Length: 392
Image (tube, rainbow, N blue to C red; front, top):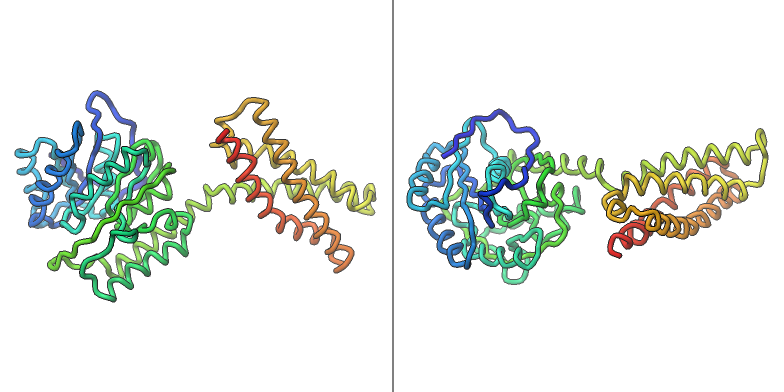
């Protein structure tokens, strides 16, 4: 049995598998005061997993130094079940970091997690495994798809659970909206989707962390019915809610930093500076005093070339690096020009209306036009210039 004595956790990363001890599946059970349930859950899981032909697996119990000595009971069980490992963490108590530290010690190609208190039915593990075998990057046991549900939850508990999900949809819709049950703590994920990624978990909602920071593309959902354990106190409390809100805020900041749209806007800001400078040099009465429309076309084309270069190298780099030949980049540039030419037309219309009809300052009118056209340019190019070529 391993023992971990750690300070407050910083970012965690998952290392690549190290042969020869490569397994198919590593299932982590985070525990705290689960000695009453641990034997039953292990026996049921072993029976379910042994029923999958040829499966090489391990079960890792990560216990946060339980006062009821769950870790000691797990160690005793490991004598009976050699596929069971136990880790006792000291001076630290947090479900998400317990799961990730279990995965750090794991040997499996696929990671899994579930509760150890029998509220997650062990037999569902086989359905999750089948979903992963069909090619999913992430298989989630969901209470919110057909066939799933909760057993005897009270109305207040249902409201709290749905409220937490709604809050996730408000703060990080691009994460919480990927699955029907983002609050689920029962799922499998490919190790390759997490390798080398910096993870900063907090609280109970480890799935939100995986969805936000992992390289997850194909997702499958498996129904399950949550089993109520009467003697178990609810995990919902003001402190847990505050921790959840902090985690959502942390993910929102992370997504803003890494969002393609934010990157697109940053690149667009550099293009705006070039566009405005060129417009001044060409059209201002104090400089060349060319026509506003002609000056704008030249300024927009120079800015467009700048934007393409940086978007191809940075904003959409994970697509463009797969297709980086001169011919492929040239095709993207032509598409980018074609789509942005529509944006230039819209820009010219808005600019001239603002300047000639509403008598706005030419530079304020120009910035207003750029702001509106940015959304057009981003959405069309994301769907057609880069994403499409990535599938060719």
